[in-house]
Image (tube, rainbow, N blue to C red):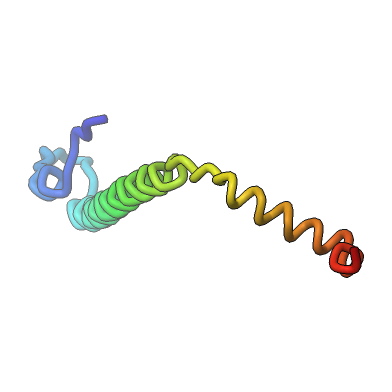
Length: 97
């Protein structure tokens, strides 16, 4: 999207005068407000664009972190978990035999 106007073009715009034209002071004051709005919008767009890029980079980085493969348990890990589970379920009954 390309804007046709910027603050400089608005500031430098000349209007022809006519017998029953507008008051130049009122037009100038209005155009000053328009210029301020343009500058505010430009700053806001720049901030939002920067934030958008930062969030995209952050999402991309976190996506790479979460996509790392999880380590597979070894036989020793499985046997250790099974042993712990047996102790919790059967408790002291295992040591009595």
